[in-house]
Image (cartoon, rainbow, N blue to C red; front, side, top):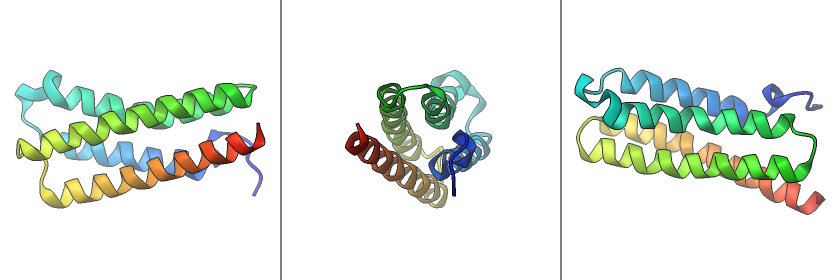
Length: 121
């Protein structure tokens, strides 16, 4: 299947699913944590598919790789933040497993794309 835009990338689509799951679960976080952990978790989640999209729209492989690197950094941030949320009992174990699984999948797919692009360049 040809890739015409970032929307055609499975990794971007999975990133959107991850964002949706993060937004749904953070709705139940304590309101006192809106600026503490809720907002950073949401920003990290949004950053992943956003950077994939921005990188895909650039005209060089080097730029795409740069933005994929930023997406991977955001994935690491999110991994840390959901671990903290779980430890603080804001995130139920089942939701933690679900989000962590999606995050691992998106991270692996992003790394696979990086490796593929590295071979091309």
